[in-house]
Amino acid sequence: MHRALRITAALGAVLFALLGLAACGGIPGDAVVSVGGESIKKTTFDHWMSVAAASSAVSAGSKPVVPDPPSYKACIARTKAQSKPAKGQKTPTEAELKKQCEQQYKTLQNEVLGFLISSTWVLGEANSLGVKVTDKEVKKQFEKIKSQQFPKAAEFEKFLKTSGQTVSDLLLRVKLNLLSSKIQQKIVKEKSKVTHKQIETYYKNNPKRFGVPEKRDLLIILTKTEDQAKKAKQEIESGKSFESVAKRVSIDPTSKSNGGKLPGVVKGQEEKSLDAAVFSANKGVLTGPIKTPFGYYIFEVQSIKAGSQQTLKQAEASIKAQLTATQQQSALSKFVKEFKKKWTAKTDCRAGYVVADCKSYKAPKTSSTSAPAATTPASTATTPASTATTSTK
Image (cartoon, rainbow, N blue to C red):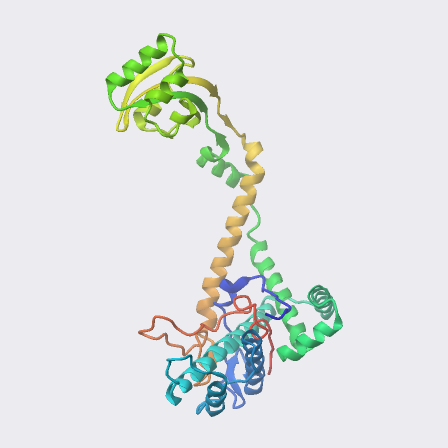
């Protein structure tokens, strides 16, 4: 895949996939979509269809051509010329080739319309929120990205030629990204204040998150019967090493090969009756047999590492960071929900150009896979068509 200025809008696919702008007074004759009084003209749509086709062609290693509805004659002829069926396979019919060309067109159309609409949403929303970026900021960021992606001027010129984009197109992409970042910052700024009371409440309600539990290192043996456990215990008490007895009689796969050693046991980790016995036993005392659903245990606590608890002061910084992140995410989610309802109802699309972000869109009743939902700059950021934006009046 050719290198491109891959810019992902900071608010992300989840945000701008759900936004839209109003159409006032219907759709002008030279437009395919009207967004808040702003028209996406047919010429603009055609331009980005060519860009999208160029991107697809680079990936496929073929000549960029936009499928030609409604007959798709040129597309059918090109596909027929480029495709040779494998030995034993049937040559596709005209109807099959037409269906293939139609699907190619719809895929490009959904991608392009989705991008143009969502790009206009970003610009319109920034305007309504009073979020701005200067031409100087845009140019500076553009030059930075350009120098990183295209160290040689010839590489950049080749990109422009193969992608079908202009410098103006790319500058608008950079502007879109910067505006998106500033919109996000504006949304979350008001939700970045966490009070000491909130921190204190969280600390009190989640004590386990700020504590390190007591740990005990054990020597342990598991047998099938109580008599076997008693016999093993007697052997150890009579002088045989715990390790030798464990390796010979224990059926616990975790500790047997390690001479019965079971380090770092935390309360609640083992079976209930064994857990209770382990954490009530004294260090160095051979204990058991303890009956469990798995058999009978004998054990000895070798060492005890006491638990610890962070103070509120010690935990304050991490709690504040967590609560801030949670509040910011909640603010973004609320923003998305509110604008989905508000803006979708204000996006008008001409018949034949209706995608999921249009007011008149109706989801198919029966379909395992639907066409791309005219999403966002971020969600299709790997292609020049989907990462570029334009605004026309």
